[in-house]
Length: 203
Length: 257
Image (cartoon, rainbow over all chains, first blue to last red; front, side, top):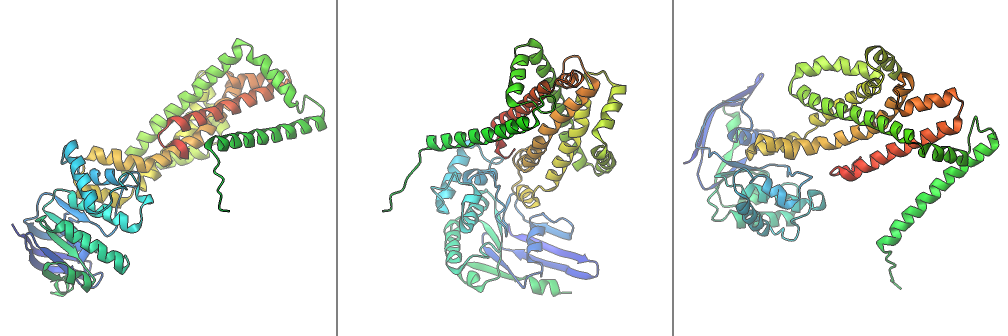
């Protein structure tokens, strides 16, 4: 089922952010939100994921389980790589399944050998990969990614995108990605691009 | 060239022990020199006199009984402060009105002189409970405020992350909130360990329960037995340090204590 966002309205005082906006998101594909910073891309993700509830909106088709790769890594500093990934899984899988899933995803993001390290012992790129692994192995139908590869140099950026593509292929997940760089948009098999800036200006 | 000298761990440990022995020897000699300069045991007993007095005390059963009772009061006071202060902070964090209600009380208790508390407690309670009460009044606000500020500083981003992954409430508390607040609780504990001994012994001096280190301190004043005063003081320091070191070992992640 495709995701529908219908008649979304939000105003802060006099400024109207969204005024009766509607759009759809195709299931199983990658949809990109683009637009200048501050136009409401992150807000839109938060509305779809129900993190922000203070809006007039009708949303349908959002699966029960969602994963979110935030702009920040949001890792638990007192847990190691394995436990950080398992943290998201403990309420949805049994122990043996968690072990298998975590081991597999750690291999996928090429963190094998670092399982018992804490975030503070990892480089920025490695921390990002842990966050990616956690978001990816959570059994959800929808994956939201908020500028997931921002703030890394070109080489690392390249690597992270390649890694993402590898684990994305065949996963069947619906993905919404907030993206700034055209480079990223070119490399991902994006099926729809939604210009949030244009949406939010529409009166 | 390029040879590296790798010191085995054992050597490192002995090195540290030697360092501490030297530090202790230094202060003992400072003490000894001061005593020799004053040359008046009533004002400043020498280390030797103090240790002799301590030896004489330690051979009596009452010495250990006094320590036991004071120790029991300190622990009782700490457990009460801990057991009341931390849950109170959790409730105050959830209920704004409770926090507002408690704020002036906590502020007042913090600035009240210990002696006023003790004198008041003397009127209210039996002499044996006065030290416990004054310890609680001193330590509870510390546990309370530290825990509360810890709760306030829990990373909202982590809570949101847990919300997205639909992590159950009890797990959020156990795996995010508690580890975030723990350093604050440890720092409160570290402050309170010192405070509890000071306040309990001070209250004991005034309330003079039958068995207590405070009462023994008071007695040394009556008999002008300064070496014994030093001996008791030394005992208090050693025990309170031992308790702190012991807790550091026992508590998970207590190294930060």
